Image (cartoon, rainbow, N blue to C red; front, side, top):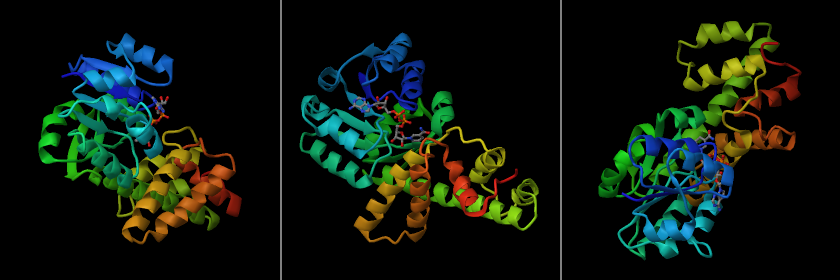
Length: 294
Ligand code: NAD
């Protein structure tokens, strides 16, 4: 199977290396960043361009920042779709607006090209380990055909419905994570203001109903004042913008998402856009003067 991959950033680069490691060795890659391309070529891929990828590959994969990037690469002037053959497939692993996924799929369908939207969660460490969680939208038979390829990068690959369902699931994930981080920061700030050590609050409640993967990962970072990303506030703003857009286009109320998005925007405006999203604690610090755990 001839595979093309466009977008070799924090996530795409290790994912491409894992595709090669799993034995899918006919891999062409492309990115605006030539150093990233060189690194994946050193691991066994072939440097290519969008035209050649479209003309020669059975499946084209992207791992790009957001909907406009995916639309520009696939449907824009000299877009990859213009070169792809009927019967080939496009798999977008970027986290984008599901409404955009459906628009791209409709344009591809006119040319007889299949599509899966297959965003991931897990971040850079799991991209490196090949243990990402994939949330996939698309036809069952297309999912079945390409699941082994996704398995090469992930520990969990779940089909959630038709095209767009993958990114809808990813937005649900991002809403739950953002609201959970805000709740952890708010609760630990409240406890410290009331005179109880946040570390003891964490130890006392982590095994109960309030405990969560988010609390395990982010409460220690808040207490250490460790803002190293992880997942950047600016990327979370991008995802919540997509969540608000998507929710509004379907008439779904998302008041908690809107509230946490305003706080993330305040953090962006105050120089924290490149910090880990656990830096939401800095918003509470600005309100109360409290640095959690310090
Ligand atoms: P990144 O910014 O590190 O990488 C994006 C890459 O796309 C860059 O290498 C850039 O040069 C390339 N690119 C941009 N426009 C291009 C174009 N026109 N042609 C070719 N290459 C182009 O981003 P990332 O962290 O790898 O994230 C990619 C996607 O995965 C995003 O949608 C993000 O939300 C999602 N995601 C990220 C994480 C994470 O922890 N970083 C976790 C889960 C999902």
